[in-house]
Amino acid sequence: EHWKNVTIPEQFVSRFGDTKFIDKNYGWLCGQYRTVIRTTDGGATWEDKSPPVYWDAIRSIDALDKNYALIVTSAGAIIRTYDGGETWVEELPPNTYTNMLHRVQIVDGKVAYAVGNEGAILKSTKGSYTAVEEEDNEITGYSLLQNYPNPFNPSTTIKFTIPASLNPSQGGTLMTLKVYDILGREIKTLLDENKNAGEYSVTWDGKDKTGNEVSSGIYFYNIRFGEISISKKMVLMR
Image (cartoon, rainbow, N blue to C red; front, side):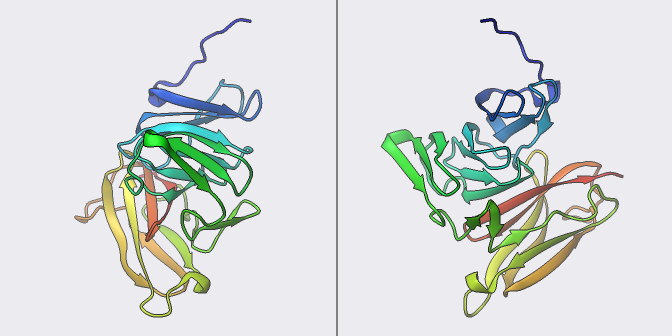
């Protein structure tokens, strides 16, 4: 019957393009510069759940429950979260599919549709975008764990896994592990090499590519195995 303004903290103000609420209290807003913010109390407070910053904008978001959501962007990227926005998996990286995507709809845990420019209609089924497969809302195959400790000072450890079932028979898997700041600028490359199947850990010492200490703040670490891209957020506190 009546509409009223919902206050958004100044640091989260964006040109919002879409919203999705699971119930009267739990929902997301999304918009330019890949902004995603989440509320669990009907808009009284908001949390930043954005994937790593990129130049494109989020055009649409849909969610199956409080954990599983899917977004599409103006650069044609398709990105999922299985844990309420703590972790984002790029199933279709930006500029792989060149058309702008406008809307996305989740049918169930395995099927979703996205539509975009020039009559584009994309369907996601289990394993259709990348080798990432989901079962019971868990990412199997390649994995990236939350860094520890987090927050940290001066260093933190990042662990990841390459499964034997998805590893080429010879030469290993070409992968990169990079650190970015909150504006999406590359801070340091931690790994850029072939790796065989197994569990690995890498330490970041809180320094940039020139060896200088970076300031306190939010950073993202991104691991990429070919078309598979997984990112997580970490906090450095000097």
